[in-house]
Image 1 (cartoon, rainbow, N blue to C red):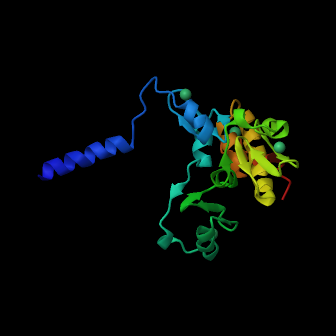
Image 2: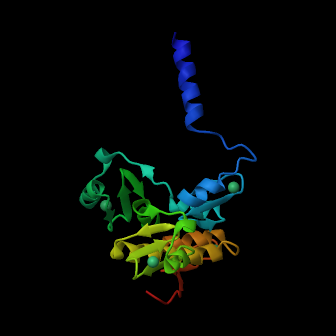
Image 3: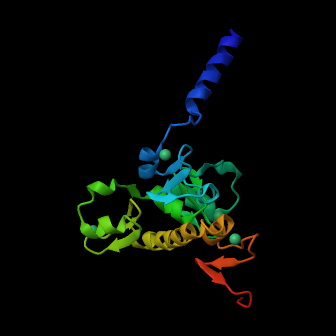
Length: 203
Ligand SMILES: [Zn+2]
Ligand SMILES: [Zn+2]
Ligand SMILES: [Zn+2]
Ligand SMILES: [Zn+2]
């Protein structure tokens, strides 16, 4: 009896976490809704291609589960209730999942579109990177549509950094992560803020 129970738990786990099989390309789906393709070793966030696994992992595309009871920050507790963002902690919440970047938080809140179905020429051009369309009153962050202009503005800043980081991947992967994190690359000792190098003399 116990043995059957254990067996069925094992088979349930096997169903829940399909192990990546070689030749099992998931790009068609992950390009649309974000994710990492273990077969091609590329990730997508809002249809933007990311070729560094550490950069992709850092951005935390799918968010992570939190235990609301363990959260002490008042502003986080308030944010969880309204799918908001806590500026103090740099954490956003959507459907009780926590996101560590403005970009993935905004992408989780926005609406994923199939770029081939976008009728407006502006919007369809914006879907290749980002942009706000005054005709449709909608901002695109890759293939994700965001209607709130303030939210769009913050997400577009984060997207700008991601595009700069993407360029950096070929030269230094840890610099690429430092760019999106506003941090210092431990290898090159270069500090980045808002996608730009900070000279050591700067405050
Ligand atoms: Zn693939
Ligand atoms: Zn907080
Ligand atoms: Zn438009
Ligand atoms: Zn570096």
